Image 1 (cartoon, helix red, strand yellow):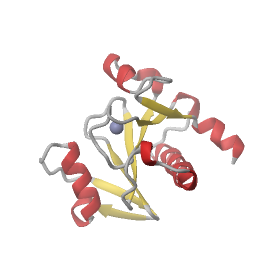
Image 2 (cartoon, rainbow, N blue to C red; image 1 turned 90 degrees about the horizontal axis):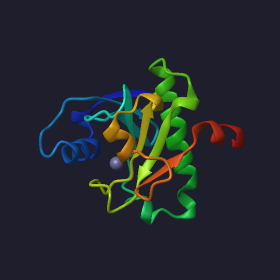
Image 3 (cartoon, rainbow, N blue to C red; image 1 turned 120 degrees about the vertical axis):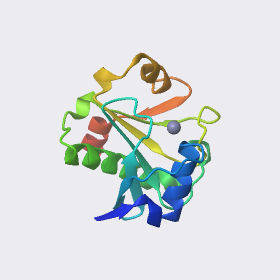
Image 4 (cartoon, rainbow, N blue to C red; image 1 turned 120 degrees about the horizontal axis):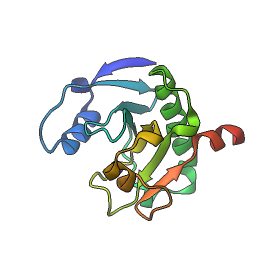
Length: 146
Ligand SMILES: [Zn+2]
C-alpha cells in the first residue's frame, strides 16, 4: 500500500480534471496495487470515495465477465478505505456504479458512500438503489460469498 499525491499520477490527474471541469485539485490518493482511491470532490455523504482502476476500462456498460474480479476488488478497496477512515458499519454503506449515459465520466469508477442513512435529498436520487442509472453492489453480501 502506497500513498501518492494526485499531481504525480497522470491518470488520476486526468480523472479529477474531468470531475472538476478543468480546475486542478490537489488531493491525496491511496494506491492499492492497480486501483486508486480518493475523496469525491462533491461529497454526497460524510464519507464519499471513488475507487478507480489505474488502467482505463471504459464504463460499466463495456464491462465483461473477465472484469468481475476487478469489480470485486474495487468493492474490497471501498470497504478498506471506509475502515481506514473509522467507518465500520458495512450495513450503512452505499456502493455502486453510474450507468451511462447518466454518468459524465467515462472512466469506470465505484462510488462509496457512508453512512447511507445520511444521504441528502439529491444524493438519495443520484445514488438511488435499484434505479436504472445507478447499479449498487452490496458490500456485506459480497463478504459472505468471498
Ligand atoms: Zn459517477
